[in-house]
Image (tube, rainbow, N blue to C red; front, side, top):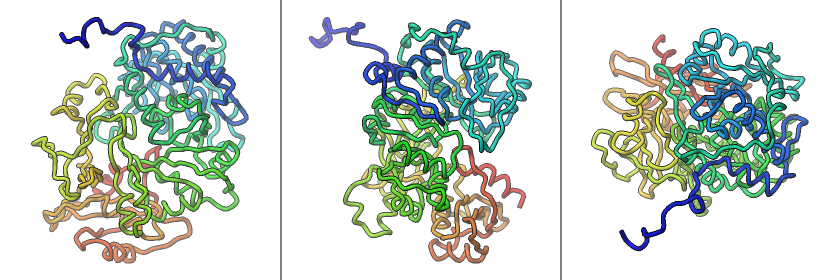
Amino acid sequence: MNAYEQHLGKNPANHQPLTPLTFLERAAKVFPDQLAIVHGAGRTSYKTFWERSLRLASALAARGIGKGDTVSVMLSNTPPMLEAHYGVPMVKAVLHSLNTRLDAAAIAFQLDHAETKVLIVDREFSAVMADALALASVKPLVVDFDDPHYAEDAPYPKGERIGAEDYEDLLAGGDPDFAWSMPDDEWDAISLNYTSGTTGNPKGVVYSHRSAALMCYANTIHAGLGKHGAYLWTLPMFHCNGWCFPWTLAVQAGTHVCLRWVRAKAMYDAIADHGVTHLCGAPIVMATLINAEDKDKRDFSQQVTFNTAAAPPPEAVLSGMAEAGFAVTHLYGLTETYGPAVVNEWKGGWDALDKGPRTTKKARQGVRYAALEGLTVMDPETMQDTPADGETIGEVMFRGNIVMKGYLKNPVASDEAFAGGWFHSGDLGVMHPDGYIQLKDRSKDIIISGGENISSIEVEDALYKHSAVASCGVVARADDKWGETPVAYVELKPGRAASEDEIIAHCRALLARFKCPRTVIFGEVPKTSTGKIQKFRLREMARNL
């Protein structure tokens, strides 16, 4: 034993479990009167936010909820969702946020798999939740949330009460001075998020207190969150726990501006009225902002940082966002990496590049987050790095402290995901000479035509350069001669028109002929609740052509 190991062990004075729960505790003590949450006409200070979270924890503890128990929530981007991110883990329980667009069968599967003990339900979703509970084997305590700020012009009416208790009554019976518990170990589970389940049942991704806390620091750095910034909730909080931003904002005592429905006027009003500095979302949210009618737009003086994941936005969208006052940061990650773990770190000199080279730089996913220890592209068979030539395709792999604990009750899938000591993303990409990665496709989305690999992302990038294209997805279609050929599903911008021949000719001007779609189908492109194109739906549609 060397001198640095003698009498220098861990003790309570120098070692505590990492957890994001302490961020809210600090914010409430240091900035008790600072505005924490805006929801409709409601305003909540950090002191009240902390006390309500404690009340929730106290009420859960009184009902026997403790370590390892699952509390599921079916909630919009509203204050109870934020309170659940703290109150549930305060009693060492695990928060399971349900996707609000799931059907009853999918919800029932998750409730049973998670062994849900308590279920908090927004009345907007009570009908589908009632159906799910009828299908599920578990019989959790059901709590209704009746939103007092439900908009008069709501696109969906409130459903019937289905719970045994009311959320506000539950909190009223809780103790605002409740003695909450730090996790026994920072590796303990804090939340459970299910993958989309495009093939078979979804897998339950387990997050730890440690990784969630580290993600908060990384978010603060890479999103450029300053003290008391204002964050608009366009990204669903159920999606990877809102990329950990429900916990992150407390680091800088920022303001959560809640938004139940993503609509152009509501977003512009929030940005102008509440001084919003940051928001996150898919490209569809950007399109909603820049394509909004003039009557729905508002002027604002501050520059707003827009963090986006999924496919890189087309140049026209980036230009439109810049003109509207938004600075776009391109991110990449997965549910298994707590949301974004890769950032396109933009270098000042790139602004002077011509449009083509600048767009090429923008299209890259980027480099690892500060909280991620390893990011590479490998041959998944040999587990050797691919050459950093920007051309050799391999699988994108992650290693570090913001990678999931594993899949709940699924050791086989966990072992496969972590084979060779790296997390296998299933995404195919290349490594550029400067260390920036760029996605080329999901492994299942590569189209093999006449023995040649076609990246669906490359074809989609070409399609997005057509001025009439709002969104698109490209998948393989079986072909007797070529094996597979690309088929494009295209959703046009409102009021715009284009023919199949026009779209194909446009692609031929940008791509090798064999990469161009042979068929173009116009109509609404199916998307997930977070705005991502549902490729599995498109593949199903292509099989029926």
